[in-house]
Structure formats: C-alpha cells, structure tokens
Image 1: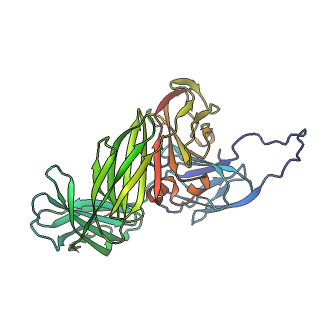
Image 2: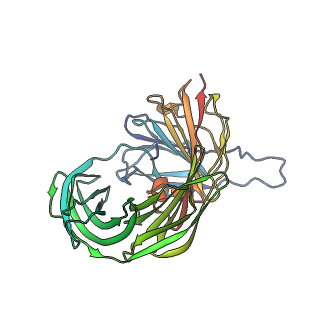
Image 3: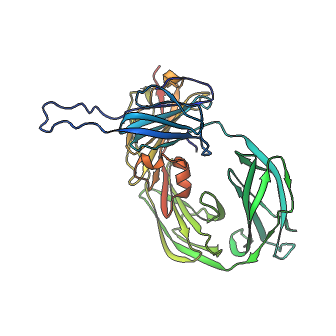
Length: 429
C-alpha cells in the first residue's frame, strides 16, 4: 500500500495543511505550578512525492499561518510554529489525504500520494554465460534489473537468452542500472536445493525508447550455505509463511524460497555471494489480522535463529458496524510497542476520499478537509484498519524522503509490519 484545512483547492496538486492536534493545554489558574511557555520553532520543510522528487508550487499552510507555496525544490519555511504540530497532505486527483500527527522536527520531508512521474521504457536483452548451456532439467536462471525508479525480473531461456521488451522505470529518460543473475537447481517438487552460479553487471546505461541488446552477464560458481532456526508466534496467531530473499540493494531483494506451512522449524539452503546479505521473514494470521517479522543482513550461514512474530494492534472504538460517524468520532486501538501506526480509512464506493493517518498515538479522528474538497462524504459505507511498523519510536522518524513505506523496506536488523483486522462503519447522513 502507498500513502494516499486548507487554502487553495487545485486539481492534481497537493494541498498541505497543518494544525495543532491533541488536547486543550490552557493553563489552569489554580495549578500550584506556573504555566510554561509553549515551544515554537521555524519549520523549514520539503514536500516530495513517492519517488522522492520535489513537488514545486504546492500550497502550504502550517498551524493556521498564511498559505505559502513551495519553491522549485519543493521547499517551504514557516516561523513561530508551536510543537507538536500535525500536517495534512491532500492530493485532489486521487482523492487521498495523508496526515502526519505529532511532528516536532524543524526540517520535515513530507511524503504522500501524488501523480506518478513520467514512465520510461526501453528494450533490454542479453544472455548469460559461464554455466552449462543448454541448462539441465530442474535448473533455471533468474535475471534482475534494478535502476533508479525501476525494478523487474525475468528468466533466461534454456539456451541462456533473456529479454525485457519493455523494461519500465519512472523519472528521468536516462538511467543507469545494475543486473543480477542467479542460477538455481530445484528439487522435483520445485524447492531450491542448490544455488549454482551468480553474476552481476554494473553500469547498464539506458535511455527511454532505446534498444539495448547484448547486455550479457557472466556467472561464476558460488558456494552454498544454510540458515536454520524456529519461529514463535503471538497468542492466537497461526504461522502461515516463512521465506528467504537475497538483498540486491537497500530497497530491492530477490525472492529465493517461500514455504507456506505452520511448522515452526525452518532450514533454507542459501547462496553465498560475498557481502550480499539475506533477508529472512515469517508471517502469521489471526482472523483478518496479520503480522510479519523481517530479519535483514543475515550471512549465508547461520543456525539457531529465533524469530518472534508480535501481535498487531487491535481496534477498540467505534464498534464494528457503527453508524453516524463524523469528523468528531474517536477511533482507537491498542498500542503496538516500539512502533508507529498508520490508521487507514477507505470506501469501496466510487470517488470517495481515502484518509491515511500516521501517529505514534492510539487514537485519532478523521480530519475535516471539506475546505479543499476532501470532506468526509455523508451516508457512505467505509472501512478502517490499522497498520504498525517497528522499530520506529516517533513520527519525526518517518518525516524523511523515504517515508513510511521506504523505511519499511530498509530498516536494518529485525523489523515488524503488522495489520489489524478490518472494521466497517457508515458516515452520518
């Protein structure tokens, strides 16, 4: 999933608004302690889209200040802002609002739904060598191409040829990529039993609309390793999947093996490719809820691994099927220790707004964004659920160009992504 009041409404642009959230902090004249002065800062931020590109000319409103417009680099600056503050990003074209609650940093980079940059395509092809050709039975060679803004994979033919007739990436019409090729021998049941050879080609220059043949990759024999251990699950959850991937870059990986059983023990053969690391993952379900734990940076050989799948947040209020919901209705859930939450509100009805709210807290309301054309529609069926990502301790940590989902793909060591079950409600008539 990607991230989906105000002053200027404009089609196909972002509208950024911020307001101080939380409870009333008015001083109590009967308090034995004198009131403290609220902290104010100058917020010098930047607005980017999901591809980390700056968004220029975007209206910006922070804590009721006069509206600003981002410059050509997506930057804005507002002085005398009281912390903590909330920020709402509204994308009119996709009918999606992304809300950050409880920011305190002076240099936030705000990410949300946006129009995709121009897509580029090129015809890329080549062959693999260094292995026995034609490839024997039960052998296959996966070829991956990674560029800035693009990622695809395919399989070489028995004779070793491979092709991406329309390799796609986003952004600049010129890009440079890296190619990876891995030969695998499967069992008759389709399970990898040996990684035979690996090759890498760097500096693959591509231009949109071009044809780039003879992008050949030579593979070399590699040793194998093994990772093994056990998985434990939170009470009430059932283990559903365990798997292993090869990390090709900080953001992309190559799936190696997946096993859909409830058995706690696992043992996976691995390719030993020098500094390239592995990612182990395991998932469990409980009704409509799901929880996955990831361990990145594993070496090719490791035993006695213990993965623990945590319980996800559980919704409290409102009750499932509640009617008459409005922008003052409180939604609440149980906390996910060591993580931040993404509460999502969405409708299957056509052209209805989606609201995604990032918060370290355990409750929220749906913001009133009617002034920018994204108000909560009346008498409409909606659904809501809560995601949580750990280890992240506060919203300031996701106010970077990677955003929530970028951090999810790159958190080192052990991390967890969990989701509550789905509840339904109807908005007020």
